[in-house]
Length: 166
Image (cartoon, rainbow, N blue to C red; front, side, top):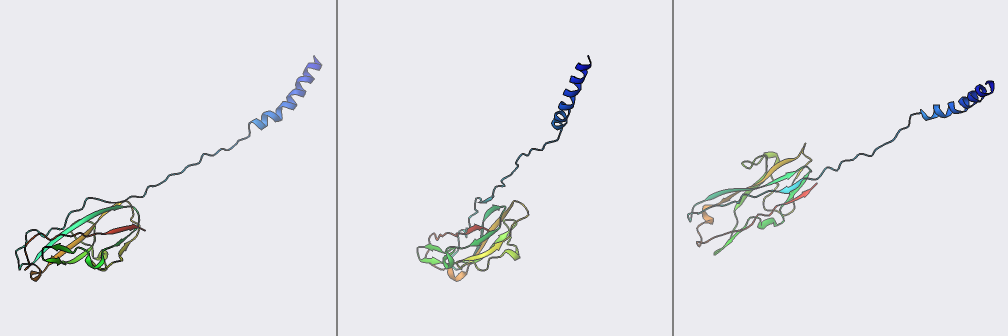
């Protein structure tokens, strides 16, 4: 019996460090990531339409295109001096424009007016918004009375705006 107790004691002494090691804490890790998507898209535009104009009368009109974004943006006008030019039976009409960006489609915010509405190149750079935002690129056009005393017909054109993520 003594011998059995000694054998049991010897086995316990050998096994005790193994049991103690089995209780040591270990650390594992799991990688975590998120890819936040870029939001950058034009919405449906509202056309700038002077309507039916009486010859010799002035006319005004406003149009816009919404841009939804979560990045900075650089706005430019690729057509430069011909931006918004109207072409028709008597040739070209070049309205006078004010243009820029508004938080609604109704008004340009003074700090976001374009440098010019008829010059190629970058016109306005806006930084990263606090979150996803929708803003409106607005063009307000004016035809002077002297411009409309011309041959009748439909005069039409296009205002192209380029938005580059920044």
